[in-house]
Amino acid sequence: MKVWIEKINNANSLEELESLRVDTLGKKGVLTKEFAKLKTIPNEEKKAFAQNLNEQKIALNEAIDTKKEVLEKEALNKKLESEIIDVTRFNNELSCASVHPVIDTMDRIITYFQNLNFAVEEGPLVEDDFHNFEALNLPKYHPARDMQDTFYNKDFTVLRTHTSPVQIRTMLSQKPPIRMIAPGTVFRRDFDLTHTPMFHQVEGLVVDSADKISFANLKHVLVEFLQHMFGEVEVRFRPSFFPFTEPSTEVDISCVFCKGDGCRVCSHTGWLEVLGCGVVDPNVFKAVGYENVSGYAFGLGVERFAMLIHNIGDLRSLFESDLKLLGQFK
Ligand code: DAH
Image (cartoon, rainbow, N blue to C red):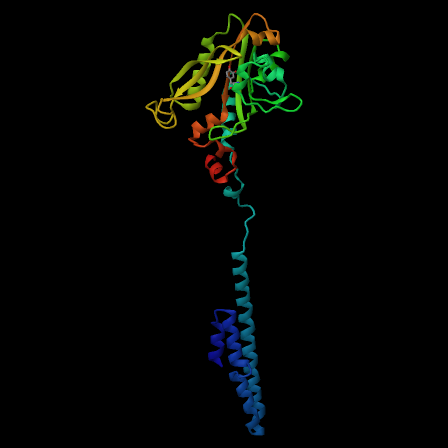
């Protein structure tokens, strides 16, 4: 039996231990077979023989029980170890969201102008004709209204087509000097590779006494701003038309992709248009009752900035909630 006890002590698993139990104490086990011999043994030897077998049986059972306890404990520990959950562990992958590139770009623009002491103003998304058009020198039936494809509501209000009406609201509720930006959502009936029905703009307006503000101030502020946003770019002011500014210009930067050599993104011109601006038209000041002041204004599309900063080709991809794309902006 010594050999069996040794085998039991060396068993590596509960399965192995169980098969050793069957081999010794099972129906056809070695010890069971020994007990069977009792029948054939002479009566006077029976007692000693049986006693000896019982001692062996007890020894085997004890060895098996002891080993079983050890192996069961080991198995439990292994299981606990493999199922361990460290609730204090922080999972970066799952819980760390990223800021949407449009909001991130908007935040950068806002922070830049806040540092220059511009106030951040807001206005309603549903505007009336006066604030969205009329006061901005866009009278009814003026052909310039066609520049913006407008969503009209039944009650003749509109979804604001630009953030410029916030200029009007701010001037109507405050006295000059004014130094503000108006970031926000705007809406137009347009949908293709470069247009979405909803997008974001940042409007800027500075008003002060007539002798203080000129086109030169506007130019300085915008050149510094654009070089802050896009790095070492050249900036050019190109004559244009907006009803609410006179003179008006559109502003181009040298192409951030080809450095002005000409590529597909800049249509081989070397320049990218990034915003509109100008000196506030006197008719706008008339509409809000401002006198003896001068001012400049600008307006830009945030998605356009985000696309140029992050090299995003299709504007629509910014609104598809594609986590693979958005995850790249951590
Ligand atoms: N409101 C214009 C637009 O949505 C952008 C703009 C151009 C705003 C020139 C201005 C400006 O304040 O001076 O297209």
